Image 1 (cartoon, rainbow, N blue to C red):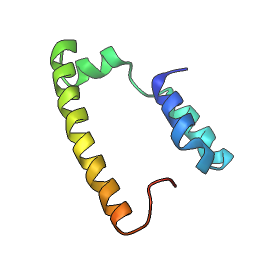
Image 2: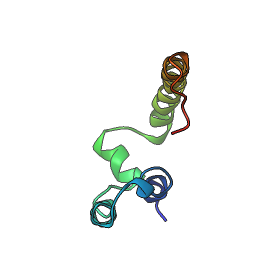
Image 3: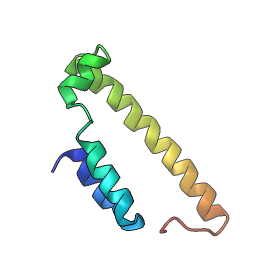
Image 4: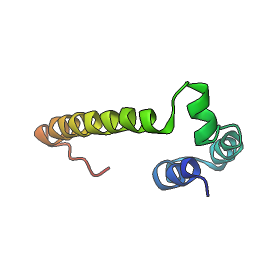
Length: 79
């Protein structure tokens, strides 16, 4: 299974009806491979990894902030 399809199955599939699942499945065939995507955005593997690390580091801060907002209001984050 391609990573995007696996991620969809783990996170969103349970919340979608079959027509949406079918559309997502078809759309997966139009996604570029990693090497095609890097070529499209004019990046090399090494420089892309630097950018991805920055994104992941920033995401952790944003995720922590959002979690604090939900838990601070008693809404929880397990939904």
